[in-house]
Amino acid sequence: MTDLPVIDDPFDGPAGGAEPARLPGQFRRNHQGAPWVAHPTDTVKPRGNKADLIATCQRLGLVDPGGRELDTLKNDELRDLIGSEPKWVLYGRPSSFGKELDNDFNLQRWKERHLVRGLALDPSFTSRVDLSEDGVVDGMVARAYDAAQTSLAADRGSHIHLLTEIADNTDADNDWIAVTPDGEELGIPYALQERIVDQWFEFRSRLGIEAVRIEQPIVNDDLQVAGTFDRLDRFTRGLDTTLGSIGTGQCAIGDIKTGNPHRTTYPLQLVAYRDGQPYDPDTDTRHDWPDDAAPHPGIALIYHYDLARAIDGEPVDWQIVPVDLTIARRGAELVAAARRYAKRDDVFAPTIPAGGGALPEPAACDTVPSPAAPTTGEPCSTSATEADSTAFPTASSTSTQSPTSRSPGELDTETPEPTSSPTSSSHSTSTKNSSTETRRQQLRDRYRHLTDADQRRFADLNINPDDLDAIEAGLNQIDPFAHTIDPTPRQRPTAEPRPVGVDEGEPASETELADVRAAWGLLEPDQAAWVKSVVGQVGNLSIEQNPSQRRVAIGFALVQLAAAGWHDVELLRACMTDARVDDLSTCGVGGAADLAFTVQAVVNEDLKFTTPKEGGPLQLTAA
Image (cartoon, rainbow, N blue to C red):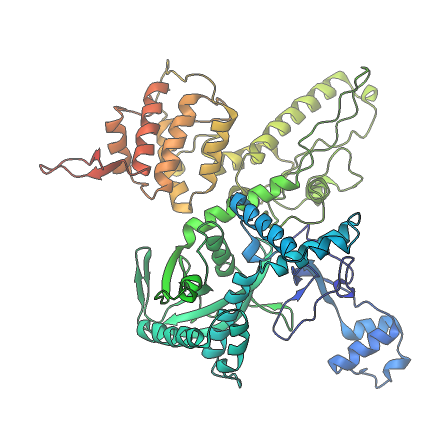
């Protein structure tokens, strides 16, 4: 874990508001509600003056092993007695992860309407404030939203969460009936609250659902989010869904929703919970899922109750919405990639002087994350260039890191600074260095086109970062579209003569190249292995060596077919037959385009696989 936003003491209250009070079992949060969590690996020495250190020792029940009084110890001795403390990092909230995918046009219009209504309800808002002060205007906006009851739906949803939490918590001393007056103030009649709880009990009893954990805090270090999900439930009788089955006695994550389910953000929120670690906010420690209570890896559940319709008097009951976590993980990767792009500060090149003259020195602009570090998560306070300079020293960096100090498998992506004047080197040495650095630059470009998962796989190879031959071999092993990989390298047959005269077509556009690379990066391991196997039998399909329309079309067809779950040779052959492609190694750009079109029709369910009545290979027919 690197490049996380760390502060010396987050609990003094940063500018803009004080830290909210933290209750036992809850995350520490900043004034905007974002959670602070302990860094997964890094620690710091205890901070504070002597009185603070003594107070910490007393709170922890620590005494000097030598029997000395605490006030006679030096500050360093007190710090040694206390030991290390977590380094605090600011994470995002799972409920906010994926907002980049939402079209917020309607939401923005809704908020604008509520703002106008709030101001109209109390016009004195604008008459008694100084509109030249931004902070004052922000407060006026917040009061206008309150007047228009903008948060009413959210507050009602939170109340239903509380009702079910109290009802499910058999250890709680208080009764859910005690909080019903709060619901009535929100416009939820007592009778409706009682019916919701009764329906909740009946719904869970009918399906054999038992709560294992309620309001479970979770930290996901890969996505850098932390939050609390509603239920870890055990299904005593199992549960069948169209996504598969939750076995008898198996657990799954359940989250309660009372509004309209958002198909973009809710699945991302659930996969952030499932792929995170249970976290104890009181001790700031991470834990693994228990073997007997690990949640289902592919299915999570939304427990949905349409509260608005119920308040309007319509008959409503609880229902389950199964969520495909496999698809949600791919969406999470896209969001993480978008957030990394948002951090880049190298998109604009240095300004060209209007009056001519020498151009400014180019700035270091490599912002490729280290393959050894997590590459997804919330935007951090450190800029992308600053964050990457540690893993990838640049020519402008002040780091004196030697080549041997890089981590195994970490690809050096920058040209090192010269150690002597260019005039002091011989022409032959200069030429050799130039050739070496040109090759290093080419390998760096290939590495930058790898997906996050493939960059981590590359790091796992533990390649000497100064061995360019080993780096090239590693890249060839990882990326099938940059190099043809033989599916059985230990029994490599004699290569067939490469077909000549294949029509590669025009160069593909940058958008087309980006699309096939992005699609490749979302494949599951078994899907990617199948694509590599097919490519290894076809011949050279490297889009790095020749970014042609033919190669992009074939690559896109294979990746799309695999991503749809149809990574099977017989299914591929049916698509090739429909597109009138006999051999991928000899088909030209026209046949490749026809194949890509056919696969797209299959993915869109315009065509379906069928078996002829008289037998024979699979065929495609209109859906």
